[in-house]
Length: 150
Image (cartoon, rainbow, N blue to C red; front, side):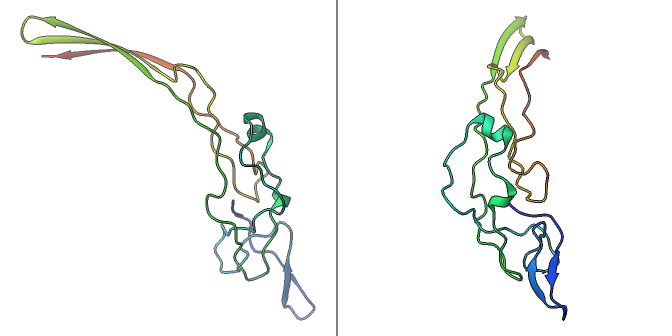
């Protein structure tokens, strides 16, 4: 979880930073975005269902902003992405013609079960799709191949 939003401070009458706007990023004001927020308050589940990954596992408001000039305390890779299951299969038939020629016929299937594997969760607090898995990996793919070795 990180924020790619620019630094948006709240200033007092003298121009001193007294806080951060809710959609602010670059918490420590070092000119580099992608700072970590603080961890969410309250109980956090250990795992989520596939539908929760699609709908969104957290709202961005669950992650409190750190104090101005401070880096958040959320650890890197604090949350897991959806599970990934993939089974590939290959059938190979070698056909020899004499002593020198081998024709190999190959039938390969990738993601045999055709399981929908969700991509990673969007961890950018500034994104409208924060906390959601918005992509998938490849569906079942079949290919036929011929290899001639001589």
